[in-house]
Length: 270
Length: 89
Image (cartoon, rainbow over all chains, first blue to last red; front, side):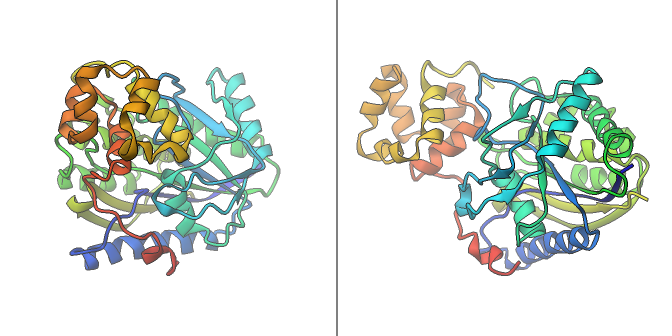
């Protein structure tokens, strides 16, 4: 059986440092710490769990979950991010799609995905040398209806079973969820950050109570954390893959000028 | 969202996602783009000069609004060079 050897979650954007240099630096150093811990876990495969920002999915085409299974992924390059390819994990990705199908959970395989900042900021900081084979597990949070938090939690459980029941012995898997925390984008409320909600969410994650997050509704998240806050679906998926795991907050900053509450955690998969 | 986006708007923005070489037309010849995608006359001025909230009121998807405003030079969030961070990874 394989093993989940690292489980991390982080907001998946960076912003202009002007006027918020200290906060921006704490965010960046928090992301770097996540990267250092992830690399120290010596994963054979990295699974990035995140959402796409309609750079690969069309507004009229809806898939709650999907996984990119190419042998390499060439980034889309939004935000000026480097376009150097990253290695894929096609065997892992295709196997998970098949495992999901057998379990009645459609996880279609995607080809020719060009990962945007939702992948490439957390991945770019975590694996600067672009050497870890990486599967991109997409959890929709921008097209209605988004999968429920319970469905995301269940997807995480499915991922755990796949790693432990199907993957080769001694294979080491690291998980990196990207997105959130509270933010409103492209809407009149843009620039608001719900600090209380963010901190409660982080505390619930790191105290091993991720199952409580599965009982949220998307309507609650939308109201309290905004349309961008729905990206915490990736965090809930992560929590479902390491149920009961406690962890540590590595950074949190409210960043209204970036239109986002920014946070990152490490969970101990045990 | 207030309602459904006007005909052609989402298709136009998706085209520009996939065809970045056409993005300069937003400033240089927006009506050529609007004609190609059948954008109704009543929303063209809003697309040319409206802000985030105007596009929201039209029913444009927020993620597509963000892209449109960036390409139009009217982004609500300041840009920055990613190298500020990535050179120090």
